[in-house]
Image (cartoon, one colour):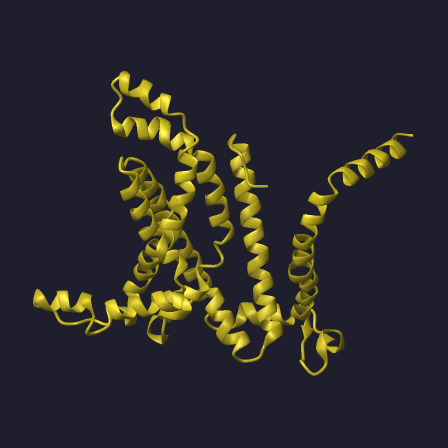
Length: 306
């Protein structure tokens, strides 16, 4: 009786909200066709995939491509570079939009704040190809940076060819491109904080720094944690497009990451099974990091992502 009653209630809810369910169908079909059905292609990581034979006709080879991945020269360096660059971006880039949002929120002129916010958001809409060209123009031998160096009597330097500067260039360009977008998210979160709390703190003599530390940051803490969890999920992907546009052979030692390593040793050499095996490894590790960070956040008493 309970099962039949539940089925009747379910059908009644579907009938009542049929238009809402109808709107959800295109989205469900999109993810089914482009996200779930292609998962079958992961099997080529365990096969000797040949285009002429297709996935079904290719022979199984087990863990052969995974063994090749871990023994290929340059894999360890790419793994270390990926983790290092990702941690640098999280440690340095992550606080920047928070600071930017707090400073923008303090502006009293709405028109100036909107203009500033739009200008800072604009780089997010530009592709890494264009940004890479801008960075090249700034850091080339005859670029603005070297012109400033020559004014102080220093010799020009090819920054993008110096491995000790490459990671810093990645972090700075990442901050410039993405900080404006994430600042908008934090600005939206700041609107939830009751202004009366600030007024009460002002009456009690709290300084701007104390109000920021005890009111503003706790008010957006849940958003910060969610974005941090997402960032940890992307730890094994240090920015493929960015690195691919900016790096060269002279900076492989400090700039080659897993994605570019897979691209060179897998896709460009038509080793699709090798590339699939490498992609599967990074996806599994990313999923583990995402779940682990989410679990740590929940055990700390915070809201997680999942």
